[in-house]
Image (cartoon, rainbow, N blue to C red; front, side, top):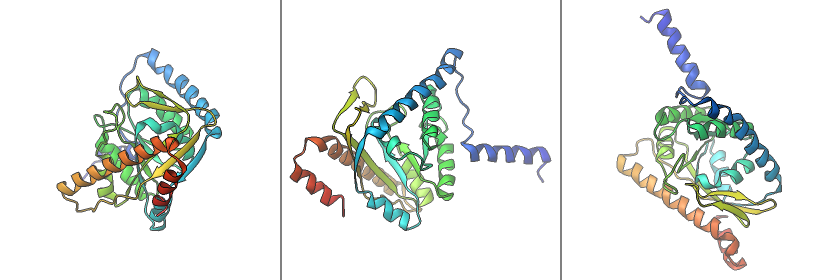
Length: 260
């Protein structure tokens, strides 16, 4: 029989997991801690100023509508590079995003929560499995989850396995996408080749068909689904990045494909 103290500890742990989850934040110098709200405020203000000027064309969204029509949630997976244009386009939908507990993740968390997202703190090296458990609970509660799939520090364009594991646990499909812009600044010295759209840029978002992972999937099938996710991420990236260099007949071909 459990003691009152043990029951209290259990309840406390449960509440911690319910809130975000109990991955301890790393200790930071005071000079770094005071930077967090300042950086967050600057980045949030920039997004709030830039976002309303962007014009989006969205292709393949009907795949998500079909998932929602089947009373399921989506597990979104996308490259870290396009986080600015996508967080504006899909703001205020309460999507739960996995983010790192490191310094960058702490100010990023503030920004995306101000934009109407939820967060689960973790990374491939700290707390990732606990983060997946919380994301599974959020899916059960009717919320989507999302991964910047090559984050938090790369390697760039190498997908991590989190969405496949979460899809197997929950039955929710993986939905991959990419955003291209006609005018933007790529910061080539950053690990992710971070993309900052220019004001009044045109943007295009490509959504690939859902990837389902059976709950009894073997190791081999899990690896196959991971490879499929990697291929789809690369394909929509390549199309979106090239979109504004294509002629109109080539664009119409892709519009027809992504409307099926």
